Image (cartoon, rainbow over all chains, first blue to last red; front, side, top):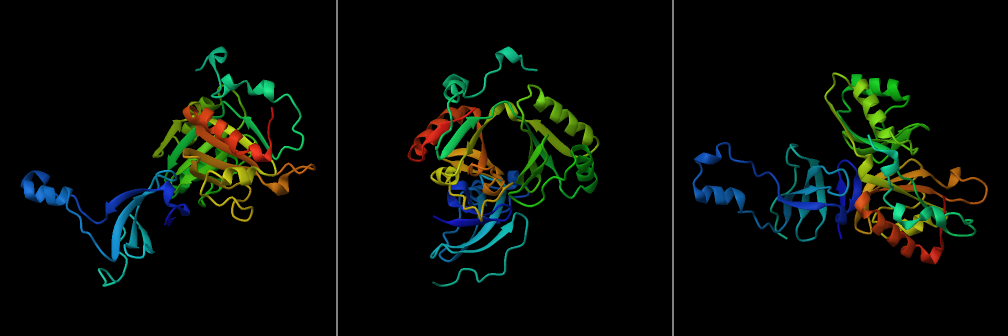
Length: 97
Length: 214
């Protein structure tokens, strides 16, 4: 069970959160200009990172806010928590483990 | 407008008034329903100093800015729910408390960008008090209810036995009157979950001896 530090409410149990998958995937500016392959790339394709992964969480049973988490997918250690719209934290990304 | 004679609390069918007639005795937990509280959800940018000042003038206290805290007086309580979201609660069972509270908020926030939504009819409040109240709630909730971590006035939205609830520690041990009453929690829960949660609390509290009080 993870102890996730919600940037608004403080550390709370993973039970209170819902998961939002990979962060920093911008919606295409002109979706109607994309072909099916490009649209599928945007909708479905996600990186399967071993190491530091930037992902979204929502404090569903608490303040109901979305935020970003940098988590090590090997150790499950949470390295940083930052608000939606904030720049990526300075972390060593895609490190070898 | 709710016709008073049609108004039933979420737990009215359990006949708690009849069970609450007895003495509390040495029970570790005392439970009661505190129905019909006026509750209004307020969304407002806390950076809007003018609106915050207007609310302070209208209610006599400032909205709590720190996470998981509350503020208030005997008439109204404000619970922090999120960085731009609060509940304002009228603790008494006055039948038109919710609409009156919403009206007061709308008047104070006139011209400001804010949302005022009455939510009281969808909730009820279960008061869990007594020296073993912390231990009882801890059985079903991942929050830390230790007296050092969850102090008087603390509030938090979380889950209790898988039901979404809002906790408010109305008074802690230090406020207890002679007789070791223990902490007083107000647990706000959706009306449709109220019977389930009441049954769960009674079952989980059996080892501490649960008294139903008026």
